[in-house]
Image 1 (tube, one colour):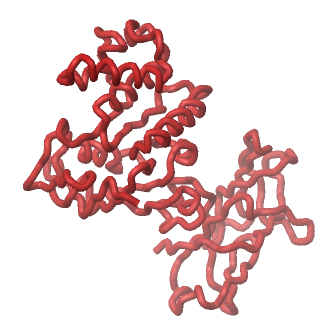
Image 2: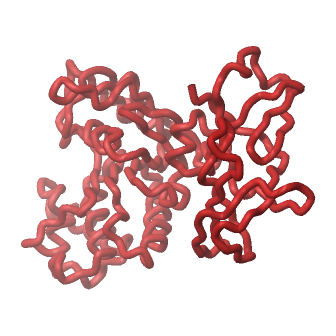
Image 3: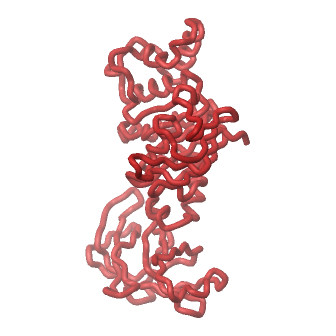
Length: 354
């Protein structure tokens, strides 16, 4: 596939502090990437560096086959052929929808501007809103105006900074699906920043998880969920709960809720001396009536999947004890109810904690 964006060894220092460190990223034409990570990890800085609002300290940014940006050869934002949509849409309140859309293409001749305006108004369902001002249209319509303005110069790459955060929760999913369909129809390459992992699963083809200024893992969302590269990725995406475990020889791990068999070829020689933790997803936990109780209920909430419980181990002050294990069940159990659970056989995801 045609490579649209290639970033190699990107570093950004601001006020002598490293904000972005050795970021590498490749996107093909038409890819939609969700950039996620905890607050302060560098997501928006990375977006602004790609856009040209922040200068890189090291590394290369290649856009298409012709725009090659280095610290020695910086290219201003207006020459990078990139569209950007800000969190608050940044529409001009004193001009109408039509003028907002045309703002970035004022240098084009009148005929070309008219053609692009008509195309974008029809594409984004803004017909009959052209003469209204931003305060006279809904939040969803404002978002579509911001998209139209970003698309008007026909950019190669579209950057979106938390584009759905200001949208009512009831409309968010519908707008995400609409925008995804639009970008796919245009074969537009896009990167969007979000704190909400659920948005990535709805909107993106790929996910990149950032932590402390670097990208830890990039892949399809399903693959990242199934095989997180490290515990920071799994923890940020809230893929499950963490429980301690200890290698018990005989190809077996011991936990506070029973022992787990493990293939000998995935256990290294030093595992007995390393503190480890198991990523345990709720679907791999089941109640048992054949073993003694080993957990108790410490919290209950109601979800569309039934009752959501947090369980703590009955053993306390032990290297294998845990306090918050996520579990779903259709039956209502009271607080402090003691239960017996077992872990279903599955491919174990284990990380060192030392």
